Image 1: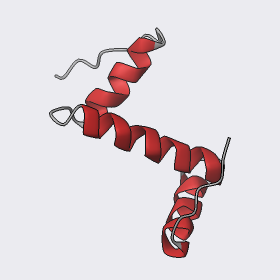
Image 2: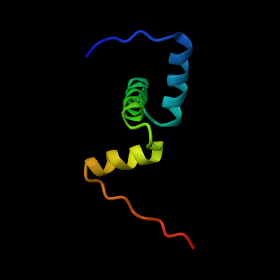
Image 3: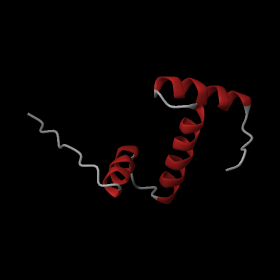
Image 4: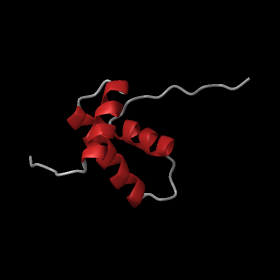
Length: 68
């Protein structure tokens, strides 16, 4: 584990987002870093596609929603 220096304004954004998402500040920053890395590695995928791919990778079944 290490220390990452980030801009104070970005840190404040992470703090605010962490309270909305019920994550610690560190967990929110880690989530954004991971999602950014996955988005760069998979530029044609949407955010939702990436989340679905990650959920399937750990074998969490996702219900399908039927549209009327």
